[in-house]
Image (cartoon, rainbow, N blue to C red; front, side, top):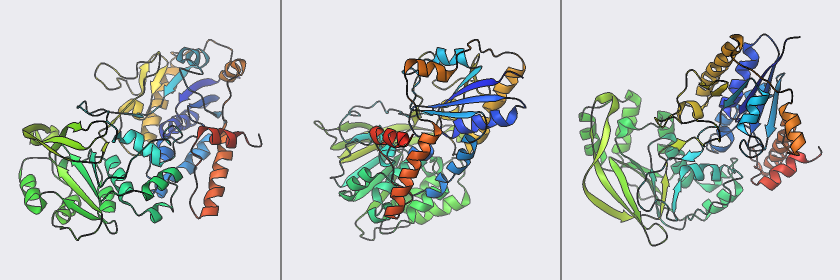
Length: 444
């Protein structure tokens, strides 16, 4: 019997599942894939990153369930590389190790006051309202009236929508109960989304913008209105999709109706600092000037620094990959330097750890498939070796390291769905390590 190809995939989000699937489907022979995940739960950003009111997107987990049930794939939840097992030990027990660990760390603005209370990265806020066990204790003070979100991506849109949504509507989703309780106390009346360039450079999709401007009882406005938009569109720059341009013209023409909640888009603005004794109370910022080649325009701060009051700041300007001891995930360029997923001999990457925080859930299918093909090609060429006879399970057992198998996750899932059924919701998430592990081990 042919020797099994043994691969460890670190990270059980979409990229991890698609890579595992590509390996099993792509090799006409035995494959053993150990899917290692730091959390007791799989699915990565589908569980902890997709907005709670986007339940349709989360249905992709049904496909991941089928992949997990495939022959040769095993889920090991609650295992942290660098703590429970070293990278070198994974390499010794597998022909290849794939890092599909995403980009969970926030990019920083590197401006004064960024560490003040009341300034939160979206990388903390999003998992907080999605019941991530590491973030449930986030102290988000919503007792002020004005919030500013820095960034022009879909994450900024999602955060704004959650902050302004009707809580009774959110209560019909799988939002964290703790987050919902805090949102019910919110006195925020204005949320502003700031971008350093203009609408034609914003990276959020037309679907996301349409959803936002269609919110009930929320005025969605563009600072400067139609006059500013026409001046912006008259300048050299990338073309806007016709439907998106029409949508921006609609927003630009709106005026306040006097509702209690308002969302304002401000473009060509960059923060230069956050001000407060121990908590943010003001924000310094400057206007920007857009210039450079049409396909890569940049924004340069110009004019005087302006200051205005703010009660909450959310930075949504990007994500970074978490370092792993013994693995150079990020090269000198600040990005992952790989060749079709190859990072080093026997070491591979997939998903956001590979390409940066870009794309949608489905982007990870082609991404993971590419990485799987590279592994299979290197295996066929005899470039991969697996010297140790001891398996990952045997190593963890010898150390007394407990883990959550896929059956454990299914018990967590069943408990969450049961609570959801009782409350008329999709699910009520388990939001602490203690509860997750207790449910995973119940009846085992």
